[in-house]
Length: 219
Ligand SMILES: Nc1nc2c(ncn2[C@@H]2O[C@H](COP(=O)(O)OP(=O)(O)O)[C@@H](O)[C@H]2O)c(=O)[nH]1
Ligand SMILES: [Mg+2]
Image (cartoon, rainbow, N blue to C red):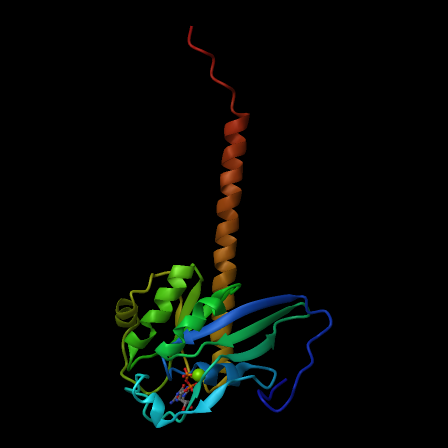
């Protein structure tokens, strides 16, 4: 299906493996845009017009051009193959909705943290919560034409471990958003393979130890 929003693709009868992915990050970093651009169904989103009432509670620095905001979450879907389907949840970014995040993370396989390089600190909270929950994630820098930082500078500013993938994207572009999700799925697959081989190594070590001849007691 090519159009992100014009059609409603029916879920295949064979789809029995639902994988939940969340898109998180600061206010106005492009979460709703990414779920919209990549979803194969018309995405559910809960956008409301921003009014002056929010001025006093939401931090609007750097996002003055924004006219609507997510007040619950975004939801979209992407079929991976006959059995596997990605369900995408975009979290609301403003601080007063952070209480929703912990619930949103339950059952989540992995997350995309979107960042705007002009406001890197706005995505700190997302990374902190994901680390707290032990949810694997990747970081995607959304292209707002912001200052160019080296990968090392971004990693340092976000205090990212070396094994967390860091990519660039344009959330408005479907293939770019797809690439971000593919990077996440590959990262999850690599983590799961590493866990499996660590478990296999532990099992064979235990088997070797059990099979080793018991030393003769000293005379
Ligand atoms: N220049 C640029 N603008 C973007 C990009 N992604 C989103 N936007 C715009 O940034 C604004 C905020 O995006 P939105 O998806 O609502 O952010 P959210 O609060 O994280 O859900 C909207 O006006 C989008 O059209 C991008 O990659 N580049
Ligand atoms: Mg939003």
